[in-house]
Image 1 (tube, rainbow, N blue to C red):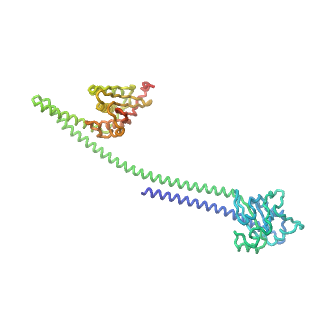
Image 2 (cartoon, one colour):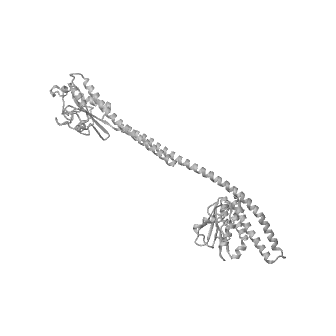
Image 3 (cartoon, rainbow, N blue to C red):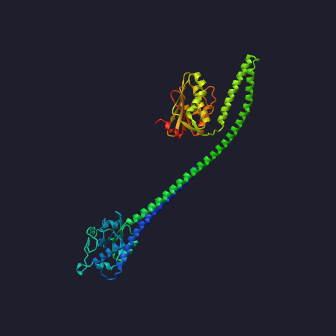
Length: 482
């Protein structure tokens, strides 16, 4: 529950930071757009102030006016500037041509297109502007309507959109303010006289670069926050698992301690049990060998001896299983050891007429000879009990690589179901009526003491036990067939 709550809080924090960064970025976008608008307005105001500063009765020709606009475009790095008179006619212009009609721009005030933004502002050039901007041509001042002139060094103006016809202009020339201007502000301009339109087009590339840099910064911060939250959640989860594992380890150590105590107690109990058991067996043997006693008594004494031997064998197996094995590694000739086991079990093999064979190269393995002998003895003894009369048992030595081999003990007895291939290695699980269920667990325990693995290979007929991971001597590599 705490883990889910902590993870939920981290995710909420990450989402909160993400939303905050988004809102901050939107604020940056709005501030940069507002800065462009303020710049256009400041340029318009500055231009009107410069014109009005010429003084009363000062004359300014169109060429001089356009020259001033060209210098304004170059110094302020503008895309274009267009000045419209009260009738909506182009009085002067400089820079690139407008991408939209002046009438549309004046009504919309702001038009964005193709990395550019155009602004329309109303300015007052004073009452004198009506005099010098409307003088007839014979006084030496030319005021062509439409595209205007070209001067040496001035930008081209042929593509400038035509001026609107008188009486067809936008709102503002009919005594009404534009939709985006308040009545108070418009009335103030009317009272100052000399109202003109100032159309300014600015490039948005620098602004877009700034917005992109801010976006990348916000995305980096958001990504870092998400990574940190995910890392913290993973660390919390890992720490919780580590705590659980530590608790489990403590529990396992306690259980292992209890098992060691039980093993010590069981070993002592087995030792104390074997002593009177040996005494009983000895007395039963004496009774069996006393010829003066009746035959029935001697036969009962023999039964006591056999039962004592059976119990002693089980006690020895239990002690072998309870005692942690430690392997003392030496070079052990594997084939020779298998032949010795064949000699030990020869009587049992002859009794069932078992066909016993050993196949594979003669190699020496790094192992504890006593443990390997006990492992193979248990497997072969189980195979002898599993096969029918005249069955077959095969021991195969199979090299797996230049350093590793496997030993297989297979027989033609009854097959082991695949579902039982792992269960038969559990203590006290036996498929034989007289089995103790400790033979195969001891085999696996001894194999693990060497770092080997023993498994029952499922087959349709018979059984096969495979010990893999056995290391053989490099000097014997030449004996391995290619």
